[in-house]
Length: 93
Image 1: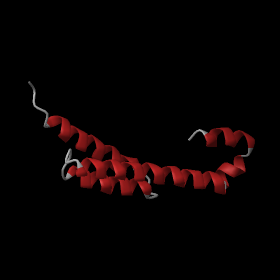
Image 2: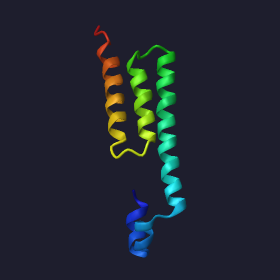
Image 3: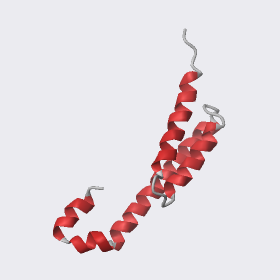
């Protein structure tokens, strides 16, 4: 996100054609993010803090790893849904 605009001034062909190490960095960052959310969902499922929405969170995390154009949208919806359900079950004292 921040590398490409700076690189465009120095070498415009590199942005258009791609740099192997830069592409690998993007792929690794997507995988780490998806794996992190999968681990969070597993931890929440194991502690029974969330129910079925945890499985949707895992599925959305797997979609976030894929090269789909809007890969973050399902993850954002799943996180919002899981947290919203959890907060909705709180009892007011």
